[in-house]
Image (cartoon, rainbow over all chains, first blue to last red; front, side):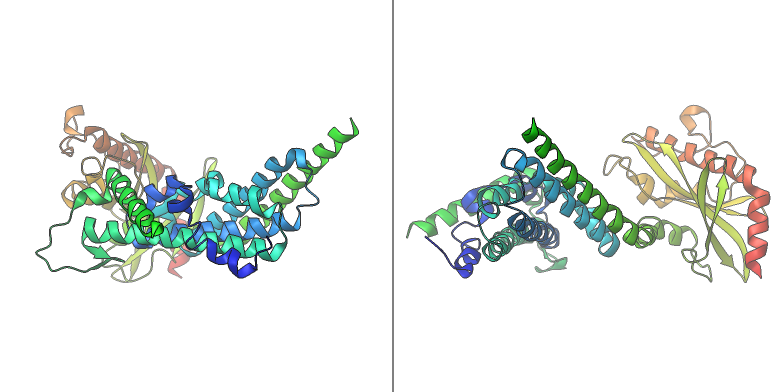
Length: 197
Length: 197
């Protein structure tokens, strides 16, 4: 049963990659992935919260009374989210303006609470750290990939730089909300096809 | 009963600690956040209306207590004379408050320029209040003591087509600037003299 920290880390990157395998945390996935930069920014913010809350909750798992654990977890997570929000305002203000409301909403991202409840509360610190980092990176990669596809097709750019010639007509549908659903659905489909083999 | 008490204590300690950590971080980042907001939110608007000034209005700023509110004023230097002051007021738009920076020449009481900082108007319609230079230019060169109204209300400002409410909001903000300017003119002149050196 006992898995190594490396296994805990790598499972987040493929076997349990959050938006595609667990199909969790879809609200930010759909909302902020209009471009690579937004997607990765959101992913990094979530990873920071995941790693910090996983480590702290794992450290405190024997102190927190079972009956009020959810309230305590939320207090820990909300604290880290506010920290991220303040730091982002202080050091990456343009990104903060773009992500806006979705930063405070990391609190209710079920991936974060899910990992706290299902993993950190039952495991030692190092596996919890690895788990948080793996899931977080998986989330970041997914957001980056989705953001990349939508940005290339929807605005003809990658990371803010044009990739096609001037004759390219942007497929504007992709950067709108329905495009997010279609793109996510197709990516899920591809992931499942690859997973079957 | 004892058990209840324990749970209660645990939650109180958790929330207390979170609150303390957050207060500390907020304190530490406050100044930086304020400056970032200046640079990224007000900065573009200020630089737009103060085009051609020979100082940095974002650095050259002071505060004045106006009734119960502290207001920021940005100083513009033109032709070696610091005689332009810019400040922000708010007017009610279609989707919330519209922030408007008005720059006034202290010697002639004329508006140098007007620019929108923050707004939540409809993209492509009301948002033109920020992006359409022809709309902004109508205020330039007018005496700040004028009452600005859109033509539909019997004034002389051409409203943006389809966005009368947004145009009204900007006008109301400029009128408010006029009131503040009248109230604080003496204070402003004294401050400017002091910074003239």
